[in-house]
Length: 137
Image 1 (cartoon, rainbow, N blue to C red):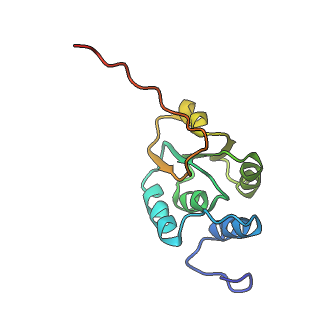
Image 2: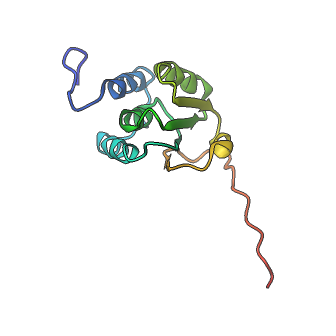
């Protein structure tokens, strides 16, 4: 895909996110095949909240948004604050989209989700879910 000949199979928002990733030298974006699947899966949800852990430069998020009904909400979290800010600018025209800087714990108060896409690399210091209390029975 070049700037002068856009790929008709790639939504414009996805192309913009791919370009953002290129400019930031970010190589961790989802593949076109995964993106197309995300779009189809997101299109099944007319209401509720779809979430993503690991925004990156927004390529996966853009695929989700391309399939998401405007009556559904989308929220994504990104550890790198500057990258989250750049993606927030990219998606600023979408009132049903929220980009949060931080780790997965920022999503807790947004649950439950109709769909959750975990697309993050392992953090250097993992944040573990609390273990449920087990009865001694």
